[in-house]
Amino acid sequence: MSLVSFVRGRRGASGFGYASTAEEVTEGLDLRGKNILVTGVGSGLGEESARVLAARGARIFGAARSEEKAAEACRKLGGDAVPLACELSEPASVRACVANVRERGDQLDVLLCNAGIMALPKRETRYGQELQFLTNHIGHFILVTGLLGQLADTGRVVMLSSSAHKGAPRGGIQWDDLSMEKNYSPWGAYGQSKLANLLFARALARRFAGTNKTANSLHPGVIATNLGRHMGSVANGLLHAASAVFLKSIPEGAATQCYVATHPSLAAVTGEYFADCNVATSSRHGRDDAMAERLWTVTEEIVAKL
Ligand SMILES: NC(=O)c1ccc[n+]([C@@H]2O[C@H](COP(=O)([O-])OP(=O)(O)OC[C@H]3O[C@@H](n4cnc5c(N)ncnc54)[C@H](OP(=O)(O)O)[C@@H]3O)[C@@H](O)[C@H]2O)c1
Image 1 (tube, rainbow, N blue to C red):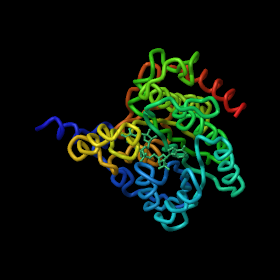
Image 2 (tube, rainbow, N blue to C red):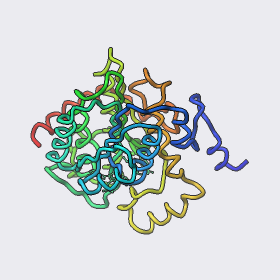
Image 3 (cartoon, rainbow, N blue to C red):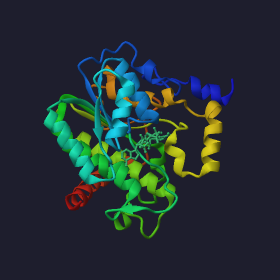
C-alpha cells in the first residue's frame, strides 16, 4: 500500500477521516429548521459547505464581500438562502451585516467562519492592522461577538483555522508587533491570523461554559482552492498540479467544518481543534489559555477604535 493510499484510508475515532467528504459526514442528517451562516460562501470550502448543508435542509445565510457576490452564491443554492454583504476587512460592513441579521430577528444555529486570505507577499495594512489579521481574525471577531445574541441555545461557532497556525512567529501572537511592521513574512502573518482564529474559539468556549453552546476550530486539510492566489503563479500552479494525487478534493476539504458544524455526536464538544474530522492536537500556543484571554482583551481594544 502506498503512503498516499494509507493516509487517505485512515479513519479516526469518529469513524471519519482524511478522505471523508462533506456529504458523507452529514449523511442522514435532517437540518430542516436550522439556520447556518457561512462566511466566504462564494468559493472553495465555503461554497461546498453551503451546498451540502442546504441539501440537508439548512437555510444558509450566505456572507460574501458584496451584495452581488452573496446574491449570486445564494441564487446557486436555491431555496430560501439569505444573502449577506460582509466585507471582513471593513468594520462598517461587518457591523452592517450584524445589524441586518439582528433586524431580521433570525436565530442562528451555526456561525461557520470560513472566509480567509493567505500569505500576502507584501505587508498590507488597513486601519493600521495587518490585512490577514484584520480579515481572518478581527472581522470574524466583530461578526461573532455581534451575533452572540442571535445564537440558538445549542448554537455552534466554528472557526476555520489551519495547521499553518503552527507557523506563527516564535512566541505566538506578536504582542509588541501585532501588525508585523518590524518583522513581516507572508506565512508568519498568515500563521498568526490562524492562531488567532484558534485562540478565539478557545476563549469563546470558556465564555460558553455552563451553556449548551459550543465553539471549536479546525484545519480542513490542504486543498487547491482560490486561497493560493497570492502565492505566485508557479507555486499556485504546482499546488493545483499536485492536487489530484496528493491533496484533498474540495468535497473532502469541506468535510471537517460540516462535521464540526452539525454532527450530533459533537453537541457537547467544545474548545477543541479538529483535523480530518477528528479531535487533533494544536500547537503549544494553540492550547495557551492565557494567550487566548489576552488576545480577546487586545482585540476588544482594537475593535473599540475601529
Ligand atoms: N485551502 C486550503 O488548503 C486551506 C488550508 C487550511 C485552512 N484553510 C482555510 O479555509 C478557509 C476557506 O478557504 P478556501 O480554501 O475555501 O479559499 P477560497 O476559495 O479563497 O475561499 C475564501 C473565501 O473567503 C472570502 N474572503 C476573502 N477575503 C474576504 C473579505 N475581506 N471579506 C469577506 N470575504 C472574504 C473569499 O471571497 P472572494 O472570492 O470574494 O475573495 C472566498 O469566498 C480559509 O479560512 C482558509 O484559511 C484552507
